[in-house]
Length: 431
Image 1 (cartoon, rainbow, N blue to C red):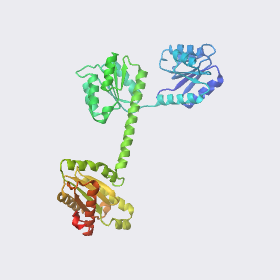
Image 2: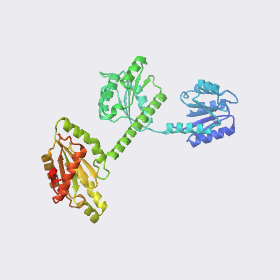
Image 3: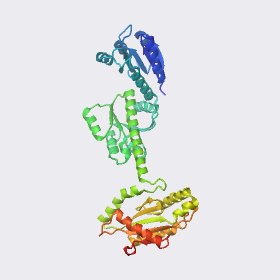
Image 4: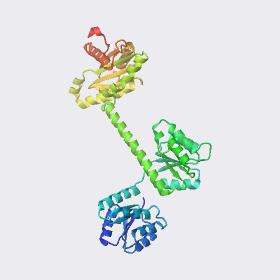
Protein backbone atom coordinates (compact mmCIF):
# COMPACT_ATOMS: atom_id res chain seq x y z
CA UNK A 1 0.00 0.00 0.00
CA UNK A 2 1.42 3.45 -0.91
CA UNK A 3 2.82 5.51 1.94
CA UNK A 4 0.70 8.58 2.61
CA UNK A 5 2.91 11.45 3.71
CA UNK A 6 2.44 15.19 3.44
CA UNK A 7 4.38 18.41 3.88
CA UNK A 8 2.78 21.61 5.17
CA UNK A 9 4.69 24.87 4.57
CA UNK A 10 3.25 27.94 6.30
CA UNK A 11 4.53 30.72 8.55
CA UNK A 12 1.48 30.51 10.83
CA UNK A 13 1.87 27.91 13.58
CA UNK A 14 -1.89 28.00 14.10
CA UNK A 15 -2.61 27.12 10.47
CA UNK A 16 0.14 24.49 10.34
CA UNK A 17 -1.52 22.70 13.26
CA UNK A 18 -4.95 23.07 11.64
CA UNK A 19 -3.74 21.59 8.34
CA UNK A 20 -1.86 18.84 10.19
CA UNK A 21 -5.04 17.74 11.97
CA UNK A 22 -6.96 17.59 8.67
CA UNK A 23 -4.23 15.55 6.99
CA UNK A 24 -3.69 13.15 9.87
CA UNK A 25 -7.44 12.50 10.06
CA UNK A 26 -7.24 11.33 6.43
CA UNK A 27 -4.35 8.98 7.20
CA UNK A 28 -1.32 11.09 6.25
CA UNK A 29 1.87 11.35 8.25
CA UNK A 30 2.78 15.05 8.28
CA UNK A 31 5.95 17.13 8.44
CA UNK A 32 5.89 20.91 8.98
CA UNK A 33 8.02 23.77 7.66
CA UNK A 34 7.89 27.46 8.59
CA UNK A 35 9.25 28.87 5.31
CA UNK A 36 9.94 27.98 1.70
CA UNK A 37 13.61 27.12 2.03
CA UNK A 38 12.98 24.79 4.95
CA UNK A 39 10.20 23.16 2.95
CA UNK A 40 12.46 22.60 -0.06
CA UNK A 41 15.13 21.00 2.15
CA UNK A 42 12.55 18.57 3.53
CA UNK A 43 11.22 17.86 0.02
CA UNK A 44 14.73 17.01 -1.19
CA UNK A 45 15.21 14.62 1.71
CA UNK A 46 11.95 12.67 1.25
CA UNK A 47 9.36 12.43 -1.48
CA UNK A 48 5.97 13.59 -0.19
CA UNK A 49 2.71 12.48 -1.79
CA UNK A 50 1.06 15.81 -0.98
CA UNK A 51 2.51 19.27 -0.40
CA UNK A 52 0.46 22.17 1.01
CA UNK A 53 2.05 25.61 0.95
CA UNK A 54 0.92 29.12 1.68
CA UNK A 55 0.91 31.64 -1.16
CA UNK A 56 2.44 34.15 1.26
CA UNK A 57 5.63 32.60 2.61
CA UNK A 58 8.07 34.78 4.58
CA UNK A 59 11.11 34.16 2.36
CA UNK A 60 9.80 33.38 -1.17
CA UNK A 61 6.53 33.70 -3.03
CA UNK A 62 4.24 30.68 -3.08
CA UNK A 63 4.45 30.50 -6.86
CA UNK A 64 8.26 30.47 -6.68
CA UNK A 65 8.13 27.65 -4.12
CA UNK A 66 5.90 25.59 -6.48
CA UNK A 67 8.31 26.12 -9.37
CA UNK A 68 11.36 25.04 -7.37
CA UNK A 69 9.48 22.06 -5.90
CA UNK A 70 8.51 20.79 -9.36
CA UNK A 71 12.19 20.96 -10.39
CA UNK A 72 13.10 18.41 -7.70
CA UNK A 73 13.40 14.86 -9.05
CA UNK A 74 10.26 12.82 -8.35
CA UNK A 75 7.90 15.77 -7.88
CA UNK A 76 6.49 15.86 -11.41
CA UNK A 77 3.18 14.27 -10.38
CA UNK A 78 2.89 15.04 -6.69
CA UNK A 79 -0.25 16.93 -5.63
CA UNK A 80 0.73 20.51 -4.69
CA UNK A 81 -1.95 22.64 -3.04
CA UNK A 82 -1.60 26.39 -2.56
CA UNK A 83 -3.43 27.82 0.45
CA UNK A 84 -4.39 31.47 0.33
CA UNK A 85 -6.04 34.12 2.46
CA UNK A 86 -7.33 35.90 -0.63
CA UNK A 87 -8.82 33.51 -3.18
CA UNK A 88 -8.62 35.60 -6.35
CA UNK A 89 -8.49 34.66 -10.03
CA UNK A 90 -5.03 36.23 -10.32
CA UNK A 91 -3.72 34.14 -7.41
CA UNK A 92 -5.18 31.00 -8.93
CA UNK A 93 -3.63 31.69 -12.33
CA UNK A 94 -0.19 32.38 -10.86
CA UNK A 95 -0.30 29.24 -8.75
CA UNK A 96 -1.42 26.99 -11.62
CA UNK A 97 1.23 28.41 -13.97
CA UNK A 98 3.88 27.75 -11.34
CA UNK A 99 2.89 24.09 -11.09
CA UNK A 100 0.23 23.95 -8.38
CA UNK A 101 -2.39 21.23 -8.64
CA UNK A 102 -5.14 23.31 -7.02
CA UNK A 103 -5.73 26.29 -4.74
CA UNK A 104 -7.81 26.43 -1.54
CA UNK A 105 -8.93 29.20 0.75
CA UNK A 106 -7.62 28.99 4.30
CA UNK A 107 -11.10 30.00 5.44
CA UNK A 108 -12.76 26.91 3.91
CA UNK A 109 -11.33 23.97 5.82
CA UNK A 110 -14.20 21.71 4.75
CA UNK A 111 -13.26 21.91 1.07
CA UNK A 112 -9.62 21.08 1.84
CA UNK A 113 -10.74 18.22 4.07
CA UNK A 114 -12.89 16.73 1.28
CA UNK A 115 -10.04 16.92 -1.24
CA UNK A 116 -7.55 15.31 1.14
CA UNK A 117 -9.91 12.46 2.04
CA UNK A 118 -10.60 11.68 -1.61
CA UNK A 119 -6.90 11.76 -2.43
CA UNK A 120 -6.20 9.34 0.42
CA UNK A 121 -8.98 6.99 -0.75
CA UNK A 122 -7.66 7.06 -4.32
CA UNK A 123 -4.08 6.42 -3.26
CA UNK A 124 -4.81 3.57 -0.85
CA UNK A 125 -7.52 1.78 -2.77
CA UNK A 126 -6.36 -1.39 -4.52
CA UNK A 127 -8.28 -2.58 -7.52
CA UNK A 128 -9.28 -6.15 -8.18
CA UNK A 129 -9.65 -7.32 -11.74
CA UNK A 130 -7.96 -8.85 -14.78
CA UNK A 131 -6.04 -7.01 -17.47
CA UNK A 132 -5.12 -8.35 -20.90
CA UNK A 133 -1.86 -6.60 -21.84
CA UNK A 134 -0.19 -6.84 -25.26
CA UNK A 135 3.24 -5.26 -25.81
CA UNK A 136 6.17 -6.53 -27.88
CA UNK A 137 8.79 -4.49 -26.00
CA UNK A 138 10.01 -6.71 -23.15
CA UNK A 139 11.36 -3.76 -21.18
CA UNK A 140 8.13 -1.76 -21.38
CA UNK A 141 6.10 -4.91 -20.73
CA UNK A 142 7.96 -5.47 -17.45
CA UNK A 143 7.47 -1.86 -16.35
CA UNK A 144 3.74 -1.83 -17.05
CA UNK A 145 3.18 -5.26 -15.48
CA UNK A 146 4.84 -3.98 -12.29
CA UNK A 147 2.59 -0.91 -12.33
CA UNK A 148 -0.60 -2.95 -12.82
CA UNK A 149 0.24 -5.59 -10.23
CA UNK A 150 1.09 -2.83 -7.72
CA UNK A 151 -2.49 -1.63 -8.25
CA UNK A 152 -3.77 -5.07 -7.23
CA UNK A 153 -4.60 -6.27 -10.75
CA UNK A 154 -4.01 -9.69 -12.29
CA UNK A 155 -2.21 -9.33 -15.62
CA UNK A 156 -2.10 -11.70 -18.59
CA UNK A 157 0.70 -10.36 -20.80
CA UNK A 158 1.36 -11.34 -24.42
CA UNK A 159 3.76 -10.30 -27.14
CA UNK A 160 1.54 -11.33 -30.08
CA UNK A 161 -2.04 -10.30 -30.73
CA UNK A 162 -2.92 -13.82 -31.92
CA UNK A 163 -2.17 -15.24 -28.46
CA UNK A 164 -4.03 -12.39 -26.78
CA UNK A 165 -7.13 -12.97 -28.93
CA UNK A 166 -7.18 -16.64 -27.96
CA UNK A 167 -6.87 -15.69 -24.28
CA UNK A 168 -9.59 -13.05 -24.57
CA UNK A 169 -12.05 -15.61 -25.90
CA UNK A 170 -11.47 -17.78 -22.88
CA UNK A 171 -11.21 -15.11 -20.20
CA UNK A 172 -13.22 -12.48 -18.38
CA UNK A 173 -11.22 -9.23 -18.46
CA UNK A 174 -11.87 -5.80 -16.98
CA UNK A 175 -9.44 -3.96 -19.29
CA UNK A 176 -7.40 -4.49 -22.43
CA UNK A 177 -4.18 -2.52 -23.02
CA UNK A 178 -2.62 -3.07 -26.42
CA UNK A 179 0.10 -1.55 -28.56
CA UNK A 180 -1.32 -0.98 -32.04
CA UNK A 181 1.93 -1.93 -33.80
CA UNK A 182 2.81 -5.52 -32.94
CA UNK A 183 4.94 -8.29 -34.32
CA UNK A 184 3.16 -11.15 -36.03
CA UNK A 185 0.36 -11.31 -38.58
CA UNK A 186 -2.24 -9.59 -36.38
CA UNK A 187 -1.89 -5.96 -35.33
CA UNK A 188 -3.33 -4.30 -32.27
CA UNK A 189 -5.85 -2.60 -34.57
CA UNK A 190 -7.07 -6.01 -35.78
CA UNK A 191 -7.38 -7.18 -32.18
CA UNK A 192 -9.53 -4.16 -31.30
CA UNK A 193 -11.72 -4.77 -34.34
CA UNK A 194 -12.23 -8.45 -33.42
CA UNK A 195 -13.17 -7.63 -29.82
CA UNK A 196 -15.68 -4.98 -30.81
CA UNK A 197 -17.33 -7.29 -33.35
CA UNK A 198 -18.25 -9.77 -30.63
CA UNK A 199 -21.87 -9.79 -29.52
CA UNK A 200 -21.27 -11.04 -26.01
CA UNK A 201 -21.35 -8.71 -23.01
CA UNK A 202 -17.56 -8.70 -22.62
CA UNK A 203 -17.22 -7.11 -26.06
CA UNK A 204 -17.74 -3.83 -24.18
CA UNK A 205 -14.58 -4.22 -22.11
CA UNK A 206 -12.63 -0.92 -22.06
CA UNK A 207 -9.58 -0.80 -24.35
CA UNK A 208 -6.55 1.47 -23.98
CA UNK A 209 -4.46 1.70 -27.15
CA UNK A 210 -0.77 2.66 -26.95
CA UNK A 211 1.63 3.77 -29.67
CA UNK A 212 4.90 5.56 -30.23
CA UNK A 213 3.36 7.19 -33.33
CA UNK A 214 1.18 10.02 -32.08
CA UNK A 215 -0.64 10.52 -35.38
CA UNK A 216 -3.95 12.37 -35.08
CA UNK A 217 -5.67 10.59 -37.99
CA UNK A 218 -4.65 7.20 -36.59
CA UNK A 219 -5.98 8.14 -33.16
CA UNK A 220 -9.31 9.20 -34.67
CA UNK A 221 -9.54 5.91 -36.55
CA UNK A 222 -8.83 3.98 -33.34
CA UNK A 223 -11.66 5.77 -31.58
CA UNK A 224 -13.92 4.93 -34.53
CA UNK A 225 -12.96 1.28 -34.09
CA UNK A 226 -13.99 1.43 -30.46
CA UNK A 227 -10.97 2.09 -28.23
CA UNK A 228 -11.82 4.00 -25.07
CA UNK A 229 -8.50 5.74 -24.60
CA UNK A 230 -5.13 6.39 -26.23
CA UNK A 231 -1.77 6.74 -24.48
CA UNK A 232 1.30 7.91 -26.36
CA UNK A 233 4.74 6.46 -25.78
CA UNK A 234 6.91 7.01 -23.84
CA UNK A 235 4.25 6.13 -21.28
CA UNK A 236 4.05 8.22 -18.11
CA UNK A 237 3.43 5.82 -15.22
CA UNK A 238 1.21 8.13 -13.17
CA UNK A 239 -0.88 9.05 -16.19
CA UNK A 240 -1.44 5.43 -17.19
CA UNK A 241 -2.14 4.49 -13.58
CA UNK A 242 -4.97 7.01 -13.31
CA UNK A 243 -6.42 6.08 -16.71
CA UNK A 244 -6.40 2.40 -15.76
CA UNK A 245 -8.05 3.19 -12.44
CA UNK A 246 -10.80 5.26 -14.09
CA UNK A 247 -11.60 2.74 -16.83
CA UNK A 248 -11.68 -0.31 -14.57
CA UNK A 249 -13.75 1.30 -11.84
CA UNK A 250 -16.23 2.67 -14.40
CA UNK A 251 -16.52 -0.70 -16.16
CA UNK A 252 -16.96 -2.60 -12.92
CA UNK A 253 -19.57 -0.10 -11.71
CA UNK A 254 -21.53 -0.56 -14.95
CA UNK A 255 -21.34 -4.35 -14.65
CA UNK A 256 -22.47 -4.19 -11.04
CA UNK A 257 -25.38 -1.94 -12.00
CA UNK A 258 -26.32 -4.32 -14.82
CA UNK A 259 -26.19 -7.26 -12.42
CA UNK A 260 -28.45 -5.39 -10.02
CA UNK A 261 -30.87 -4.63 -12.84
CA UNK A 262 -30.88 -8.30 -13.86
CA UNK A 263 -31.49 -9.28 -10.26
CA UNK A 264 -34.40 -6.84 -9.99
CA UNK A 265 -35.75 -8.15 -13.29
CA UNK A 266 -35.55 -11.70 -11.97
CA UNK A 267 -37.33 -10.66 -8.80
CA UNK A 268 -40.08 -9.11 -10.91
CA UNK A 269 -40.40 -12.15 -13.19
CA UNK A 270 -39.87 -15.09 -10.82
CA UNK A 271 -42.08 -16.50 -8.13
CA UNK A 272 -39.85 -16.48 -5.07
CA UNK A 273 -41.25 -19.66 -3.52
CA UNK A 274 -41.20 -22.00 -6.53
CA UNK A 275 -38.58 -20.18 -8.68
CA UNK A 276 -40.96 -20.58 -11.62
CA UNK A 277 -42.10 -17.68 -13.76
CA UNK A 278 -44.88 -15.68 -12.18
CA UNK A 279 -48.11 -14.38 -13.69
CA UNK A 280 -46.44 -11.14 -14.79
CA UNK A 281 -43.74 -13.08 -16.68
CA UNK A 282 -46.38 -15.30 -18.31
CA UNK A 283 -48.16 -12.23 -19.68
CA UNK A 284 -44.81 -10.73 -20.72
CA UNK A 285 -43.56 -13.73 -22.69
CA UNK A 286 -46.79 -15.34 -23.91
CA UNK A 287 -47.00 -12.91 -26.84
CA UNK A 288 -44.09 -14.67 -28.55
CA UNK A 289 -45.81 -18.05 -28.28
CA UNK A 290 -49.08 -16.72 -29.70
CA UNK A 291 -47.51 -14.69 -32.51
CA UNK A 292 -45.46 -17.69 -33.70
CA UNK A 293 -48.50 -19.96 -33.54
CA UNK A 294 -50.56 -17.60 -35.70
CA UNK A 295 -47.74 -16.66 -38.05
CA UNK A 296 -46.65 -20.23 -38.83
CA UNK A 297 -50.10 -21.83 -38.27
CA UNK A 298 -48.75 -23.99 -35.45
CA UNK A 299 -50.54 -25.71 -32.62
CA UNK A 300 -50.46 -24.20 -29.16
CA UNK A 301 -52.11 -25.56 -26.04
CA UNK A 302 -52.37 -24.43 -22.45
CA UNK A 303 -52.61 -26.58 -19.33
CA UNK A 304 -53.89 -25.28 -16.01
CA UNK A 305 -52.82 -27.48 -13.08
CA UNK A 306 -54.22 -27.29 -9.57
CA UNK A 307 -53.15 -29.28 -6.51
CA UNK A 308 -55.98 -31.34 -5.11
CA UNK A 309 -57.11 -30.73 -1.52
CA UNK A 310 -54.29 -28.29 -0.88
CA UNK A 311 -56.28 -26.32 1.70
CA UNK A 312 -56.80 -29.49 3.72
CA UNK A 313 -53.07 -30.22 3.46
CA UNK A 314 -52.29 -26.78 4.87
CA UNK A 315 -54.79 -27.25 7.70
CA UNK A 316 -53.37 -30.65 8.65
CA UNK A 317 -49.62 -30.09 8.24
CA UNK A 318 -49.29 -26.30 8.41
CA UNK A 319 -48.40 -23.62 5.89
CA UNK A 320 -44.64 -24.21 6.20
CA UNK A 321 -45.17 -27.76 4.97
CA UNK A 322 -47.49 -26.48 2.27
CA UNK A 323 -44.85 -24.02 1.06
CA UNK A 324 -42.30 -26.85 0.98
CA UNK A 325 -44.64 -28.87 -1.23
CA UNK A 326 -45.03 -25.95 -3.65
CA UNK A 327 -41.29 -25.23 -3.74
CA UNK A 328 -40.33 -28.87 -4.45
CA UNK A 329 -43.14 -29.24 -6.97
CA UNK A 330 -41.97 -26.12 -8.82
CA UNK A 331 -38.49 -27.57 -9.14
CA UNK A 332 -39.96 -30.90 -10.31
CA UNK A 333 -42.04 -29.17 -12.99
CA UNK A 334 -38.93 -27.48 -14.40
CA UNK A 335 -37.21 -30.87 -14.78
CA UNK A 336 -40.17 -32.60 -16.40
CA UNK A 337 -41.32 -30.16 -19.06
CA UNK A 338 -39.82 -29.78 -22.50
CA UNK A 339 -37.26 -27.04 -23.16
CA UNK A 340 -39.75 -25.22 -25.40
CA UNK A 341 -42.52 -25.20 -22.77
CA UNK A 342 -43.18 -22.38 -20.35
CA UNK A 343 -44.36 -23.15 -16.82
CA UNK A 344 -45.51 -20.47 -14.38
CA UNK A 345 -47.15 -20.24 -10.99
CA UNK A 346 -50.44 -18.48 -11.56
CA UNK A 347 -51.64 -18.11 -7.98
CA UNK A 348 -51.69 -20.14 -4.79
CA UNK A 349 -51.55 -23.82 -5.75
CA UNK A 350 -52.44 -23.19 -9.41
CA UNK A 351 -49.89 -23.49 -12.24
CA UNK A 352 -50.02 -22.74 -15.97
CA UNK A 353 -48.08 -24.38 -18.81
CA UNK A 354 -47.82 -23.14 -22.39
CA UNK A 355 -47.16 -26.07 -24.72
CA UNK A 356 -46.11 -24.99 -28.24
CA UNK A 357 -46.50 -27.54 -31.02
CA UNK A 358 -49.12 -29.51 -29.06
CA UNK A 359 -52.71 -29.96 -30.13
CA UNK A 360 -55.28 -30.92 -27.48
CA UNK A 361 -54.65 -34.65 -27.78
CA UNK A 362 -50.88 -34.28 -27.50
CA UNK A 363 -51.25 -31.92 -24.54
CA UNK A 364 -53.61 -34.30 -22.75
CA UNK A 365 -51.15 -37.17 -23.32
CA UNK A 366 -48.27 -35.06 -22.01
CA UNK A 367 -50.20 -34.12 -18.85
CA UNK A 368 -51.36 -37.70 -18.20
CA UNK A 369 -47.77 -38.94 -18.38
CA UNK A 370 -46.78 -36.18 -15.99
CA UNK A 371 -49.51 -37.28 -13.57
CA UNK A 372 -48.19 -40.84 -13.61
CA UNK A 373 -44.65 -39.70 -12.87
CA UNK A 374 -45.99 -37.51 -10.09
CA UNK A 375 -47.25 -40.59 -8.23
CA UNK A 376 -43.60 -41.57 -7.69
CA UNK A 377 -42.64 -38.09 -6.48
CA UNK A 378 -43.53 -37.10 -2.94
CA UNK A 379 -42.80 -33.42 -2.30
CA UNK A 380 -42.15 -32.86 1.39
CA UNK A 381 -42.75 -36.63 1.78
CA UNK A 382 -46.46 -36.20 1.08
CA UNK A 383 -48.68 -37.88 -1.50
CA UNK A 384 -50.24 -35.28 -3.77
CA UNK A 385 -52.35 -35.29 -6.91
CA UNK A 386 -53.21 -32.64 -9.46
CA UNK A 387 -56.25 -31.85 -11.56
CA UNK A 388 -55.42 -30.59 -15.03
CA UNK A 389 -57.41 -28.69 -17.63
CA UNK A 390 -56.23 -28.43 -21.24
CA UNK A 391 -57.34 -26.04 -23.98
CA UNK A 392 -56.11 -25.72 -27.56
CA UNK A 393 -55.62 -22.42 -29.40
CA UNK A 394 -58.44 -21.79 -31.91
CA UNK A 395 -56.99 -20.01 -34.92
CA UNK A 396 -60.37 -18.98 -36.35
CA UNK A 397 -61.50 -17.41 -33.07
CA UNK A 398 -58.08 -15.77 -32.70
CA UNK A 399 -57.75 -16.73 -29.04
CA UNK A 400 -55.68 -14.62 -26.68
CA UNK A 401 -53.87 -15.53 -23.47
CA UNK A 402 -56.96 -14.56 -21.49
CA UNK A 403 -59.43 -16.56 -23.58
CA UNK A 404 -57.16 -19.62 -23.71
CA UNK A 405 -56.63 -19.46 -19.94
CA UNK A 406 -60.36 -19.15 -19.35
CA UNK A 407 -61.03 -22.33 -21.37
CA UNK A 408 -58.19 -24.30 -19.71
CA UNK A 409 -59.30 -23.10 -16.28
CA UNK A 410 -62.86 -24.29 -16.94
CA UNK A 411 -61.50 -27.65 -18.07
CA UNK A 412 -59.51 -27.85 -14.84
CA UNK A 413 -62.73 -27.37 -12.87
CA UNK A 414 -64.33 -30.08 -15.03
CA UNK A 415 -61.49 -32.35 -13.86
CA UNK A 416 -62.26 -31.42 -10.26
CA UNK A 417 -65.94 -32.26 -10.78
CA UNK A 418 -64.94 -35.58 -12.34
CA UNK A 419 -63.27 -36.68 -9.11
CA UNK A 420 -59.87 -34.91 -9.21
CA UNK A 421 -56.48 -36.41 -10.18
CA UNK A 422 -57.37 -36.46 -13.87
CA UNK A 423 -56.93 -34.48 -17.08
CA UNK A 424 -59.78 -32.91 -18.99
CA UNK A 425 -59.83 -31.24 -22.40
CA UNK A 426 -62.06 -28.19 -22.62
CA UNK A 427 -65.50 -29.02 -24.01
CA UNK A 428 -67.88 -26.05 -24.41
CA UNK A 429 -70.94 -28.24 -24.02
CA UNK A 430 -69.76 -29.26 -20.54
CA UNK A 431 -69.66 -25.66 -19.21
